[in-house]
Image (cartoon, rainbow, N blue to C red):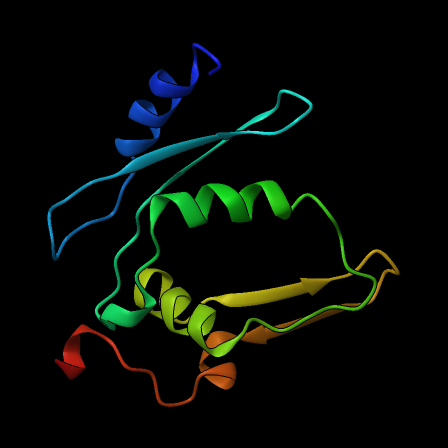
Length: 117
C-alpha cells in the first residue's frame, strides 16, 4: 500500500458532506500508474442519491476523459446540483467545441429538496 493513501483518505474525510448521518468518510484509490484519487461521502435529502466516498474517488479517477458531444446531467445529478447549488447556469462543453448553456430550473422544473421533506 502506498504510504500516503491513509493520510490522503483522512484529509478527504474533512470534505465530507454528511448533514443527516453525521458520519464522515474519506477514501483514496491508487491507479496502476501511481496516481492517487480521493473522495468523500456526500449525502442528499433524497437518501438514495447519497454517494459513498469510494464511489466519489472512483468516479474522479474515471472522469479524466472528455466527451465529443455535450451531455446533459442525468436526473440524479440534477437533483444534487439543485440541492447544493440552487438554480445555477449549467454549461455543457465537448471536445468538438459544441457548447450549450441551460438554467438548472429548465433541466429540473419541479425539484425535490429540503423544503419537500
